[in-house]
Length: 492
Image 1 (cartoon, helix red, strand yellow):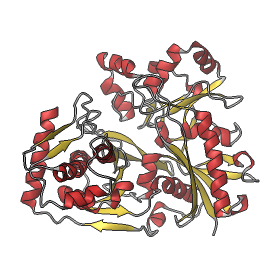
Image 2 (image 1 turned 45 degrees about the horizontal axis):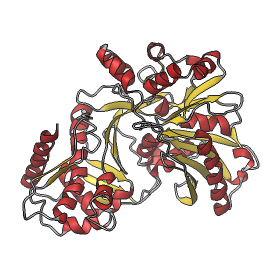
Image 3 (image 1 turned 120 degrees about the horizontal axis):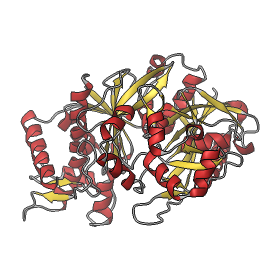
Image 4 (image 1 turned 120 degrees about the vertical axis):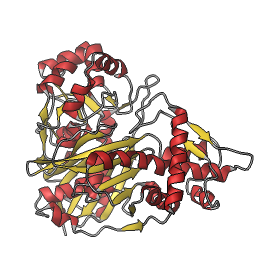
């Protein structure tokens, strides 16, 4: 059986994995990179460090797997999406640190757009909110403040790309400057209905079209690489996706109405919205799930700022538990939440509220309350936030939703998974695969290389998961959720 080498380039580390074509991990290695905070609200990465770490991770993984170029079908890439880098075309050298999706330095640009009444127009083109989370405002900020970089971009000496396109460029020795539709759709520069860079938005943000990568399908080929000599012979680069879309693909959410939630520090919920580009009326983003065979699959996306971060806060800041796993035992020691709710607006509330000024609160405490109530409220808050998003998706998506697939570290918490099932009235399939992002890219690569002829064929591959079905009394569900909505109202 031949293998696929997948690169998972995330916000904190770069991981390389070898999969067989059935999606089983053969070997993996990970290398963390440094986070740079030049001033409050700014976040940067050293793009050159990320590339070198990519090579180290590839080398370590191949040695562990005993693989070489003859054994590899292709190299696939999944990546943190909105982070971008400006780099010299001749040398591949970054002209500035990569500016990370978490960075807020484009806030003034976004505020100006909103004040000028551009928000609805931009949303109609991109499916996104006007927010510095996305790349365009920070690209404009950089070009306005760095004349040397602006000249290099305008003259054609430099290119602007998300991390996938930067890695592809270096791995192909400068032969290919390309990205996929999922990454392009997160820049606030891409017309997701027409599947092309938007001239209107390029002009608005001052970005030359010639500086941007060509946009290809996720299952397309992106040249060949020998990974700096590590492979010994050229191997096709095939299968490129932004991380959250890769997770949707890995969870085989190929039909409209199928959804996944990835539970990490925050949480990302994506629902397959079908082949028609539609906007949500209630604060949910529309993005490209993937493009295959010339046809786009769109997705509704809702992001939750704090999921696993709530449990880390209880452990690290409050000292309520020795490790995150202890939260389950604390929560199950109680018959109910005792009327205690935790609204985790530590950095504002994300979808569907989009209220960045909201701040966290714990409500309903009495002298009877103890750390068990707070731990349970923290876990329940994750499930309530998921329902907030899914309520909108159900309404705007106009598609039935019966099951949600879950992945990420928190799926090991059975109390949380059961409560998600109960409060949403949905069956939850909790994946036992911990590397779904990389798997999604690898499966896209397998389709692109002809291992699987259709997505339906891919969907028949077995998935190891644990199922949770709703079991809570309907009256209790309604009472719990009403208490949550009342708690949220107090912080908005």
